[in-house]
Length: 320
Image 1 (cartoon, rainbow, N blue to C red):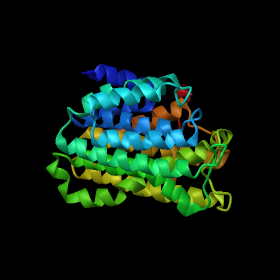
Image 2: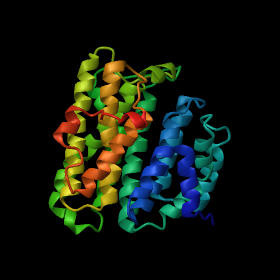
Image 3: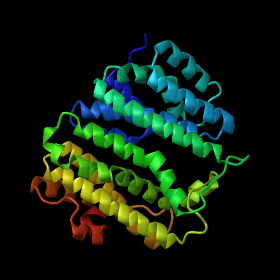
Image 4: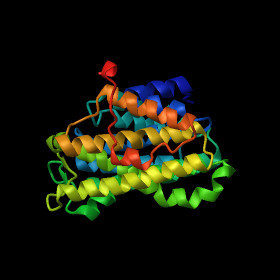
């Protein structure tokens, strides 16, 4: 029987996503542990979808095998699949390969979660794995994925990020009766939350994605139309975050949602002005984070209209 500690999972988080390694501890327990496990499971599916070293058929088979494993997470099956997934590995990233090798341990922790959390995580991660397999099927012989129009872009973003927003929402709602009044409001915007963050990343990374054989931005769609969609989605994500705050969600849940949305607003503005690859500076990220903390301390809107209209803050000279 394979066992895994929270420290082991945190180590895997650091090796696969420093952003989530820093943000997940903001969440209260048991939500933090649920999201920690969920992120790692989604990252396993992402690794198969993003594989640069496996042929298309192997990537599709791994995604389907992974979905089946989520539905019946038996240790012996997990051990045999994990061994096959790293010989040969699908990617060069050492952290992702280590995560695949440690799949049995991640699933061992998954089995300790509450039945409700396990149900939501398995359901939504499985949906994402199946959706990813459908997009891998569409890649050409060289592994290139090309999306044809805005609806296909939205569909892709839903599979890889919108479903994540739906899953996180159900985990936030578990055992929090104070959120019952706004639960349907949150569910209606949960996929938009994920789509917003994914679109900003696609716009920011479009040059490097093209170098790696991914063409998420359809040639037939004006770039301004994608920026407009991203802004619309960020408004929905901002409204989602404010609903959590107003209805008494734990501060850590609000911070976990607010910070990536605030950074996405700033990044979108910077990329629109300067082009792909543009980023916020560290002082700007610090200023955004500090403003978020001040708003929460004062119980004020953390993403007010003013922030949405001018998302990049003035940075004091001493921070530069």
